[in-house]
Image 1: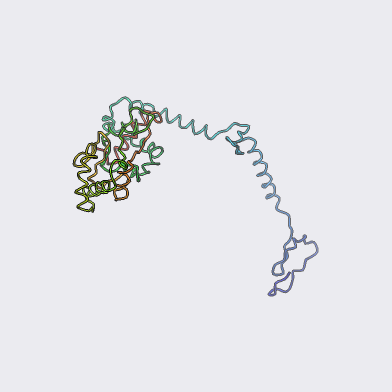
Image 2: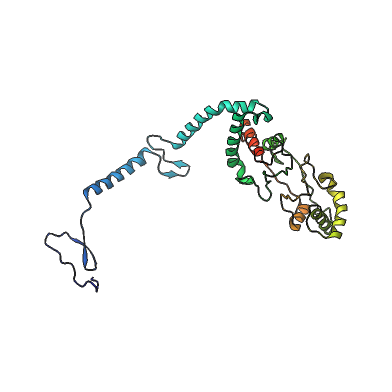
Amino acid sequence: MTDKKHPEEQILQEGDPNTTGHVWDGIKEFDNPMPRWWLWTFYACIAWGVLYVILYPAWPLVNGATAGLLGYSTRAEVAEDIATFDAMNDPLRARMEAVELAEISEDAELANFAVQGGGAIFRTWCAQCHGSGAAGARGYPNLLDDDWLWGGTLDDIYLTIRHGIRNEEDLDARYSEMTAFDEILSDDEIAQVVAYVRNISGQEADAAMSTAGETVFLDNCASCHMDDGTGDRFLGAPNLTDAIWLYGGDEAALEETVRNARFGVMPSWQNRLTESEVRSVSVYVHSLGGGE
């Protein structure tokens, strides 16, 4: 095969090596052997690969990997490093558990340890629901603002984290349960109380329905949310007069809440985290700016 622009094909000389059969622009490709240094390097890499597979963890299996003759484990190295640093931090952890919660922020070294460690704990265990920046999401509270269902003091936050909310694993979990009014109130009454809640929270609402909804609210909702709708932290009943909504404040979201209620659950962390870790993450959350 020759190119029209290069009709003269390369003429082989006596002693030239064999060709591969490839021709381009009249030039034939010689079938020269690879340089010996390259070949020996290639063979050495193969030998090293085989040796590595034998000596070190290599082939993935169903429940792990081949261990290798040397029994080397990066997990063991990491565990050893973690144990080393844990031992270094043990005195701070002991102090963290020994002092009163309020005293942690008064000790600069302890406060720094709590905030740094608590931030790592939060990003590991809490960010899945509350977000890496703690701004929350629909159904998961924003921890940066000043609106706290159960209170935002350091003690309140600690209690919430330690025992959780409405879970079945901790008898001391914070607990409240909103009534589902779907079979208690008529459709008109639900629409009226939704209009009233939108009105007291500063949103647009039908005036006549809002007026009628006030009576429905006082008869059915005020026992938890108070007559003025400002809520009750002891019961975990939210303030309905501000612009902060855990599940949304539009008509559809409010109707869903009134009809079927909400029942958010937070796990108890006292059996998942150490006492020092619970205190650290409590201090961290309190330090984000929304704590009281």
